Structure formats: structure tokens, C-alpha cells
Length: 627
Ligand SMILES: Nc1ncnc2c1ncn2[C@@H]1O[C@H](COP(=O)(O)OP(=O)(O)OP(=O)(O)O)[C@@H](O)[C@H]1O
Image 1 (spheres, rainbow, N blue to C red):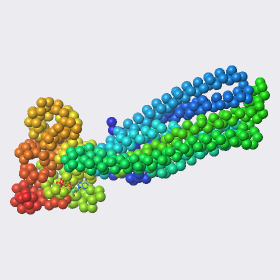
Image 2 (cartoon, rainbow, N blue to C red):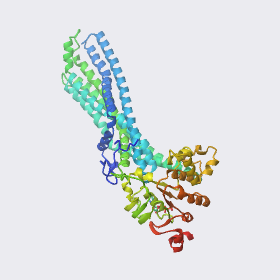
Image 3 (cartoon, rainbow, N blue to C red):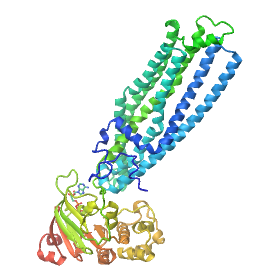
Image 4 (cartoon, protein in one colour):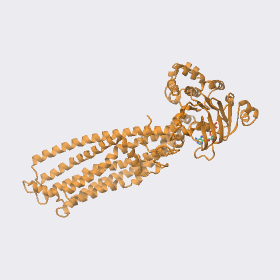
């Protein structure tokens, strides 16, 4: 499934203006909190039904939880003033409390169930979407952001958004609804003055507590996220390079670096812990102070301060024994006091998510940074329809510099590669050979000029079409954990036994397979680590040959072979490849059979010709050959 257009993650302005570009620039790190929240809500549209149920369940659940306190408080007061028949009152109280408890439990279950189903569905889709958007742009995107960072975005950052979807939306609505409903009850039952005291107390709990130190909390959360990312990158580097670390005896040095990053994370976490402690204390304080204020109002406030509906109720009930003087207001007082702990949980959860929300928003910003960075390359708005590709390549006046590099890696390159020809690109290290290969599959686009396949600018082709027609094989092939057969199947899942055998023979892999007891079923281990460097290259070459794409680019793809094996592979290459072959070679002997040799020097084409012509000419190629 292509999830690129699910619209859960914010979208970048694409390099060529195509696509839904509602975020014009790379601004993820600086987006305002409301903008990020709005985007997250927009992304949750597909789960609106479930989230709606979760919100309603929470509202009812909290109301039922409040009733558990309010019913006994009110009825205790009525009992004390003799406003009702005790037996009946106790029975009604117990029944109401049992009912409220059941409703509360049921609603809590429903809220959590629907909220989490919605959240995990959204996170799953978000991961697919991130993968869909970023992976096709690799390695340009890993060059820019680092693989550790991408990994932590796809796992930790997206996980953290669960807080937003499952633990923020419903609590926010409830945090508004419960205080308003509570104050309304206080107005009706106790009158405006107690309701005002309650409103002030609740206002402090709802606004002052979460806002206190919010800016610092946000900065601290961002710091924690950033430091964790650095730690993740460091650990991922260490895991990948464990063999080098061991052989360079650098274990202690690397462990010390990881330790230092770990301590930096701990220190950032300590900063957030202090803030949390202060907030928790403030939460307890507003409840205590509000309760005391209500008691003070009853004790020393104006006469009849709690004289709302309650007095009328008591009077209307007709007490069997006259209530003690001044006690008529007791039910209203007890109920208003009970409203404080009844409302507090709704606000407490604001305090709880105010704790984790900054981290979730920091993660959302980082994801936004990734997804709103305009990609180095993008699909065209209206891709050119691809028919049968012949495999003619043209580089027209191509100049390209890597981002942040002042000097171009390729300058004014003009090159025509006829369909079906065998071209070798040679040159000293750093002369731009691999860069040329990368431009052929649009890992990058040229800054100036154009690269064409059968006369069509690559930027006008759908990326998927381009990757089908042009296969690039690098020096360090990526093999997947699995069997040799599974790795070969990536090249052509429906390959026949003959096609497999032919590709393996051309790549020089047949003898290796014969020597393995399990043959194609041989398991490779992670990244193909159970193969030698040469075997891994031969397997990757066989896989690439199976595709028989019109263009095959080999970037030092036979560098780990001995001279004899390498020559054998090159001899068979022309017949085994599907069409045009571009061979990037260090060993000049491998270029001997090429129809055309292109010599690069500091990013420029300085010579072209056949092997014999170039040796005869005694120029750059001859000088390279002489060394
Ligand atoms: N991802 C990158 N980011 C920035 N600069 C790069 C990147 N890759 C290569 N370069 C630079 O571009 C120039 C050309 O590099 P390129 O890899 O194309 O050379 P090459 O001829 O393939 O070298 P080699 O034979 O050593 O593989 C070099 O100066 C290199 O440092």
C-alpha cells in the first residue's frame, strides 16, 4: 500500500512544486504550538469516530466519578438537617453510588479502548507514511538527517504521539466540561458566592498550574528529545562499527562517549523532573486552599451565602425535627466542598498530559522537520509516460555540487551513451565517478543541465519508472537478512530456474552456490555477513542482472574480485545485461572491452575514446594506466 497521501504527516513543498504543499518551507522546528496541534488534529480525521466516542465516554465517566462524591455529600447534609427519611435516603444513596461506580468503570474502559485503538491505528499509518515518503529518497535523505535520526523518528517520535491521540484530546475536553458543569451545579445548589470561590480555585488549577513553567517544560522536553537522538545515533554507529571498534581497541573511548551522552540525557531529564515536582505541589495546594475558602465563607461569610436552592429544598422537605439553627445550608456546603475533589481529576489529567505533551509536541516538530524538508528529488506533477526504453543516456552540460560543498563534484559534463553500449567511467579517487552514477538514478538532480534517458529529462519521469529502467549496483551491496534465493528474488520475483542459473553464471556465483550445502536456501545472516566481500558482490550482481533493466550502472561493483574473476565477469557482462552498461572502474584493465571510456578529472570529462585510442593519445588515461 502506498501511504504517501494519507495526509497524516505534514507535507513538504516538493522540489518542483508538485504535491499538496501547504507547508512552504522547512519550518518544522519553529512551528507554533497551535499550528502543530492543528496539524495533529487534521491528521486524526480518519479516526474521528473512535476519538469522538472516547471523548464522550470520558465526559460521562468523569461526571459519574463526580456523582460518587456529590451524592453522599449532599445526602449526608440532608440527613444531618433531617430533610429526608433516613432509611430511604441511605437506600437511594447506595443505589446511586453503585450505579455511578458502574457507569464510571464502563466509561473508563470504553474511553481507553477507543482512544487507544484510534491512537495506534494512526501511529501505524503514520509509520507507513513516513517510510513511504522518506525511504525512496534515501540515500540523499540519510545523508542529510543521519540514519539514527530517521530510526528514532520512525520509532520513538511516532510512539510519543500516542500521548496526544490517546491521552490529550479527551482529557482537554473533559477538563473544560467538568469545571463548567461543576460551577453550574454550585450556582444552582449553593448560590453565586460559593460558585465564585469554586470558579477561582478551579481557574488556578486549570490555567495557572499547567501554564506555570510551560515554556521551560517545552524547552526541557526538546532538549531531552535532542539528546536522546544524539545518543541513539552514537549507539547505532557503535553497533554498525563494532568490528572496527574492537580492532582499533577503542571500546573504552567509545563507551566513554556513550556514557557522556547518557549523562547529558539524565541531566536534561532532571530538569524536567524538578518542574513536575513543583506542578504536583501546586495541584494539591489549589484544592486545599479552595476547600478552606469555602469553609471560611460558610463560617464567616455573609448570612445566607450558601442559601441557594438548598434552603428551599430543606424547607420544602418539611423536616421531621427542626434542624439546628444555621444548619439548613449544610447540604449545599458539603456538596460544594465535594465538587473540589470531583472536578480535580479532570484537571489532574491536564497536569499529567502537560507533563508528557511537550515531549509529544517536540516529537511532532521533529517529524514535521523531516517531512516538510523539501526533498532533494521528487516525482513530477505529470510524469512522462514510459514506453519501451532503449537505454540511451545523455548528460547535457551537467554541473552538480553536494549541499554545503562549495566546489562542484561534476562540472559541465556532456556525455552521450548510445543504447546498448558498454561505457566505462574512470578517473582518480574523488573525481566524481560515483556522483555521476547517483545522478543517473536521481539520488540527486543536477544543479545545472539535464540527464536524459531516451531523450527524456529524468525529472519528467516517475521515480518508480526510472528505478525500474535503471539499475545501479554499488561497491558495498545491501543484502537482506534471509536466504540467497530470497535476495535473488528481489531482482525478479518470478524468475525461472534457467534465468536464475544464467544470472548466477554470469555473475560468477555458480561455483559458490555449488559449494554451499543448502545452495539457494543458504541463510546469509544480518546484512549478508556470512558471505565474503567478493561473494556478496557476486550475489548482488546476479540479482541486478536478473532485472535485465535497459540500463545497468556498476559502481565499482566488482572491486572485491580477484583480477581473473573480475575479467571473467566483465567478459560475460555485455551478453548478460539487458542493455546499456555503465561501468565505473578503478582497475583500468576492466575498461579494455568498453565501447567508450570516459575519463573524469576533478569533476570534468577530460577525455573520451576507446582503450586503444586513449593509450595512444598519451593523455590523462595513459597517465592513469602508467601508475
Ligand atoms: N554525500 C556526499 N556529500 C558531500 N560530498 C560528497 C558526497 N559524496 C561525494 N562527495 C564529494 O564529491 C566528490 C566526488 O566524489 P565521488 O564519490 O563522486 O568520487 P569518485 O570518483 O567516485 O571517488 P572514488 O573513486 O574514491 O569512489 C568528492 O570530493 C567527494 O568528497
